[in-house]
Image 1 (cartoon, rainbow, N blue to C red):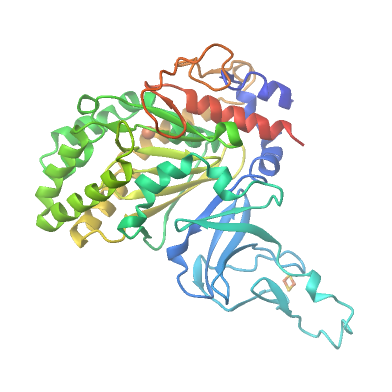
Image 2 (tube, protein in one colour):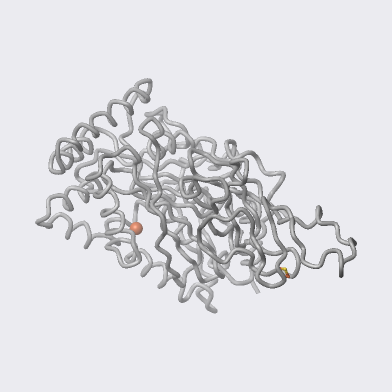
Length: 449
Ligand code: FES
Ligand code: FE
């Protein structure tokens, strides 16, 4: 039996496999997923009043609906009578939900219909107390987040430093924002949700080893468009890499990494735009002009970050390139050793059609269940998971000590030299700071009853 103390023991420097065990999983659902702001979908998928989509918060099924007044609300997808799943479709339009078991009916979360109310219940039922259980919901740049915890900070405070990175490089509201394509890729992998989450949030280190074959194949591709989109991740072309741990000091641990700077990424992107056509070039220049305007006050302008994780399980990919679709990925926990990944493809709303096509193609080519990139990661996560909870192996902690000394919690003087003035704790080298903060925050939540 692993204890929390064992699991949380030295998190931040090393993480014991007990942190991934069955023993702690239920507690994790309550203490981590019951208290954090969780991404449940994108507003563009529910444009009209009455539109809804089905999603999850941890293992809890939820309905995300735009109510009759236009407000986005999130309800537990569970009938208050006998707990039946109320909404059985992925997405649609429904002014009311009627339970398939005994036909209780809910409108904007309120219980509005109970068959045989007068005859059998004789009015002895207080419908006002039997509405759907509702989570706090907030929309940020079209991203819908929800939280079960009434005492949690606002979404703005929770995102904190992360907002700057999301606003400038993902949401691109000055260009019309994101458009999320309907439907999503879903796949189940036999791994703990924290393995992909910490990878998206800070593991630049794995790239060369895990994805070396993909980088090689892209570089050799005779299709110049494909080769060029791979080039933004080619190490030789980028002068520096940074990890950014955002908002750890204010109650979350969001990680951004592979921040590119300098002119090389821009030149590669421009070359790709030229291959796509004049429309793409004009769009690219305007996109760049607007971004430069926003960033002119900063000493050094980042071109973008490529990958991120918003604590706990909302991951982003493809942000580093104008021509890469933005993957909005949720790693839903489905057991200590089981994760269901949902991958939405977001494209930039005002991009010309050939750019949108390219964005969609590149994201699916890399991050789909059978794509060129994601399966390489999952193979490693699966091999880790196979023995994570075995007899002797569970006593041997994992190592997270790369580039110690940059952490806010490190007792030694920080190595940070203040080269850049970007928000967040920025590390001017490949590091594991983001993962350390991820597990420190996880531990903080798990230790608080
Ligand atoms: Fe929903 Fe009975 S379980 S109406
Ligand atoms: Fe990877």
